[in-house]
Image (cartoon, rainbow, N blue to C red; front, side, top):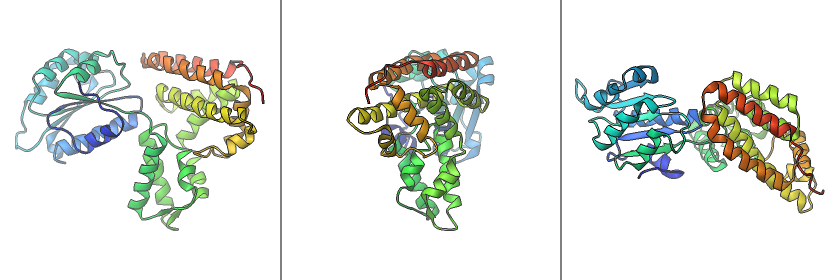
Length: 342
């Protein structure tokens, strides 16, 4: 059984194991799934575009056996070959995958999928196989973002002024590809001065899609029902994955729970918000302050657990995802939690 987690996933992507030629990438962070699939394809093909075969869901739904045929064939002109499959729900490939984990083809396969349940037939078979590996792709943790920011700044030969990294991390994190793009944009904008300042971070990142996600969470927990509904509908119109929005809600509930504990220990809501690490962007602070006065720590813990139970349901058909997500947001915004004493 090979199902990697945490840093082991990044290490495998950097140096794939030839004994595990069938590679599944899955999870709610679509950007990270696609980025890692591209990195693996480049490594496994020897950075030779001729040695890369791309297959999509439409092709394989009509002809699932095509995957095995491509994996068994060898390049006409020699060299390395890799088969890259991009298919949100690879369920039609279940029987083909079963055969491939038993008898791998000549070429490695990189399967980039959506957010699959543990019971999904393809994920479960790959996780149980000795010749395959499953690589989950979830939203970046603060330390992951800090590493990306530091490495990118070094590559652009710019420095980070005090507080700039914390400010950036507080505005990033829901989608890896989006975060990487925003960090690149930030570094490019700093080339003329050679340094990334807090002011530049706020100017460059506050209009990003990440702020749209924070807007959903902030308005929902602050009890702004209409504003939260408008914000979630905007993320849907922009094509944001519903499970990414739900994970943002869950992470925000965890942040609010920590802040609520500080208030319960004697801090004022304003002091708790101002002292948050990573720092909370100043434009978000009024809504976050309102939220921690509305919710008790116990109610927030319950909300986290409820969101954890809802996440698997957001892997349904897209139309149902949108409806379910709106209901989740409205339930949070309209809820009347037990107020904790100030």
